[in-house]
Amino acid sequence: MTRETIVEGVRNGITSMHGLIAQGRGEAFDYLIGEKTTKSAAQAEKAAAAALLLAEKPVISVNGNVAALVPREIIRLSESVNAPLEVNLFHRTEERVNKIIEYLRSLGAKKMFTKSNGTIPGLEHERGKVDAEGILIADAVLVPLEDGDRCKALVEMGKIVLAIDLNPLSRTAQCATITIVDNITRAVPNISKFAEELKSLKKEALLELVSEFDNKRNLALAMEEIVKNLYGRGGIRTPDLQLSPEL
Ligand code: ATP
Ligand code: MG
Image 1 (cartoon, protein in one colour):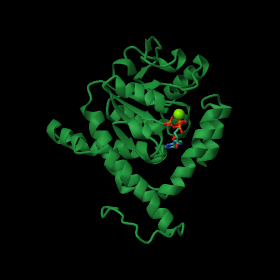
Image 2 (image 1 turned 135 degrees about the horizontal axis):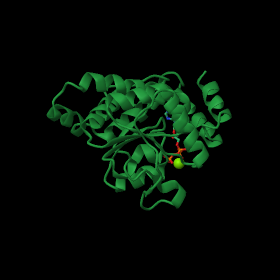
Image 3 (image 1 turned 135 degrees about the vertical axis):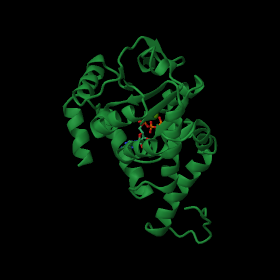
Image 4 (image 1 turned 90 degrees about the horizontal axis):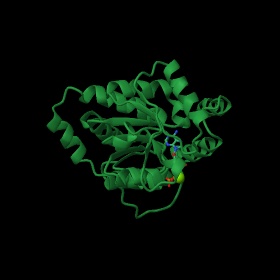
């Protein structure tokens, strides 16, 4: 069903052909993590929800895969953490940007940054286009399925970058502030759920949740989850394997 949704996205001019390849890569990693939200992914989702609630100018970046797979869920998250949406495409065409904006609006999206009057330093012209009042000046950006170069450029601008990426080895996963190794179809509703739960907490408690989160450690747990699945179900023989007790 998910695959059909994304193919439909390509047919409707919302998702790029490259989006299909990214989806395939994502599906492969989803098998490896067991097609479920792991404990470490849930921890990252909770920390990301806290970071979004703490941010003064949070923005949620939307690309063609996100718009095809989780349009309603991303609008709901945008409302619950008060983070406007901004369409941010790797293979950018104004036509596709406008189609996605129209589509999200038709589903009820209200707060959106829609200009392309800003530039992320260090990126090639088309890749670096952003809204000067949106991603350019945001303090926290949620980037589901972001490219490694752009993730790095956003981090270098001093932003808190929250990435959703099923591949724990991708450059995006490795360079983001908080990496959620989970499928966007599970991650986006989970972040909304955590945001609702955390909303009533004091700022200090939210800060503690973010500061005690260790991204390197969390990525290592995602890798261990993969090894555990290969060891258990894939029959890999690694008798001396020592897994972390929290798995
Ligand atoms: P990078 O540029 O970060 O090194 P990449 O070039 O492999 O990695 P991109 O094409 O830039 O990746 O971005 C797509 C990423 O999104 C891939 O790592 C892929 O695993 C991941 N991905 C694809 N579909 C999903 C999904 N449904 N949920 C979460 N992640 C996904
Ligand atoms: Mg890439």
